[in-house]
Image (tube, rainbow, N blue to C red; front, side, top):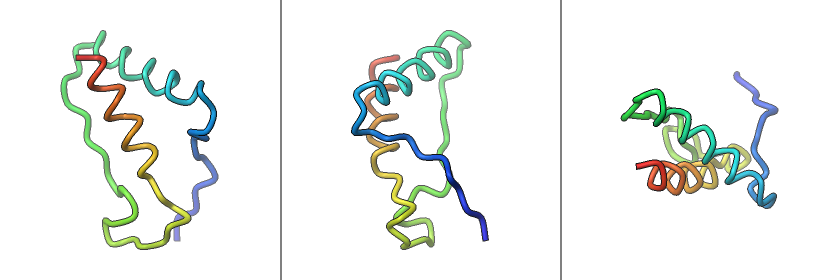
Length: 67
């Protein structure tokens, strides 16, 4: 079983800025495709303690701005 202790606190306004900065860097490098694995809930994992919806929303916003 994989346990992760890393999670971005999206209640902090700097969290979105952090994700934005990574998206900007990927754009500068010419990367035009980003794939996310094990997005939860879903992907066969229904444990809401591993809820990645905040991450997906933040990355969606960041990648839209980076285009």
